[in-house]
Length: 340
Image (spheres, rainbow, N blue to C red):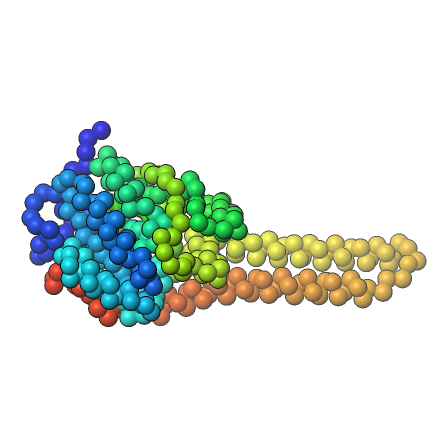
């Protein structure tokens, strides 16, 4: 298969970050939140991996998502020592998905890699992703075959969620994937054209289409530090993924309403038959209490589902900026996005 032709995606007026030439430019976007224990090793392995690729320029775009530790100071040091490093510091913690969007907006590469800073996704896999891209793939996404260093509960819930989402969503979403992937420039541009606030990157990339291929790998345990995804964060991410890419909860509310009506009609028929055809006295207190509790529960569930969708609409119509930047280092002076 012919290699992908390289057409530089650098913004008008910007010079190459590593010198002029016809080499492809690869941007690696790394969202960071309290990663002081691992960020140096992450940078070392990224550089060591990418420097083995001939005819490849690269930039490393670190997005500090309001870290509370020394992560930002370490990133400043990395940028001062390496001109290929760019640092984007957000004004507070906006969340992992927003940090991804901020980094993608600043990435200037012909292709862009998304990778977390914790080294659970081995940087060396980027080489295989690059090969898939050069062979014509528009997206090369990492698909986990094993998940080391995670509890059985987390592995089970993650497996169940991805399969549930894939069944409910209106588009096929690859199973057992995270944010780790390589995207061609046209895919990045399509991703950035989606302005929604409640974001779920892996499903958004699946939505844009194009040619997408898996790269299988074994996910490692965290190199250092602690996971930033507590159970409530994972639950919130699951809710965002389901509500953003399917109307199934609304359909569920409709079917619950039909079920409640059906049971109510069955109860009425039962009472009439007993009343008219037998001499049995029907007190009805137990049945009445059960019916009230059931209908009340159905109504609360339906209101909760509607509230989730209405809350997202309210969030969207306020039109606040997706994020705010307090510091940017290593980026060219021109081509600054309007929201910075």
